[in-house]
Image (tube, rainbow, N blue to C red; front, top):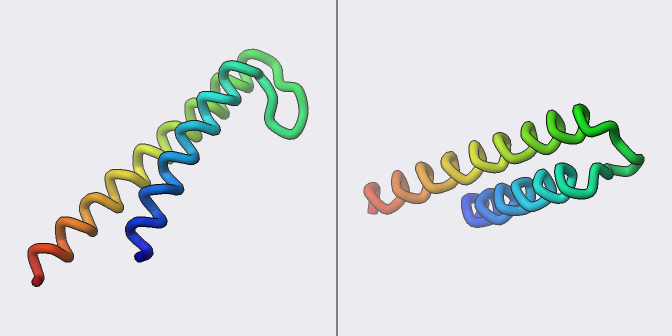
Length: 64
């Protein structure tokens, strides 16, 4: 269950990163440079979480 939740969280981080880049807003209005950096960081972290969840799901299937 935790791996599926991690997968959904990764997708959420990617969507939130795209939102920050497009609207330049995250709790407060951001400068364009800051919004690109923060949005990019969120997207990279979301991709990391998705890959980690997929790796763990495959690992669990191989153990069965």
